Structures are given as structure tokens and as C-alpha cells.
Image 1: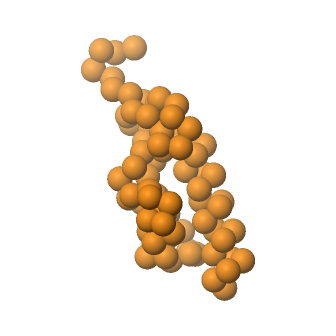
Image 2 (image 1 turned 60 degrees about the vertical axis):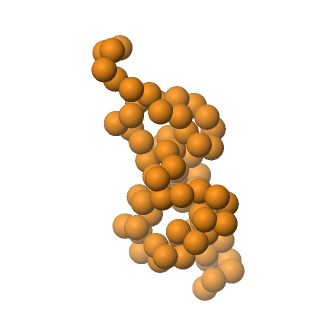
Length: 75
């Protein structure tokens, strides 16, 4: 590993991963539904900010959960 490569920790699973593989909830601003403003509020309730770091597996998990809640309670 290159000594200049930094690792960060996923807020959910606490696994460490390479800095360039960071995902945040900002990824969700590109999906059609739910709206991003709703998504930010949803994560705010869980004390997750737009700048918290996640691995790909965990950001996908949160994407599925938030979308399912949107469909069940907000549509």
C-alpha cells in the first residue's frame, strides 16, 4: 500500500476502506425518489450528516431502507 493512501472508516459497519472509495448520502441526490430534501431529513433523524462516510455496501443498505420507508409511509 502506498504510504500516501489514507483510509477512512464507515460510520455504519466501522470497516476501513480507501479514501477514494468514500460514499455519502449525497449520492442520493441523483435518484428520482424520494426527493433529496426528504432524504436529508430522514438521515438527520438518524444523526447521519451529508458528510459522514460509508462503504459501498452500507450506502446501498441505507438507500434501500430510505426508499422502502418513502414508498410505505410517504407515497
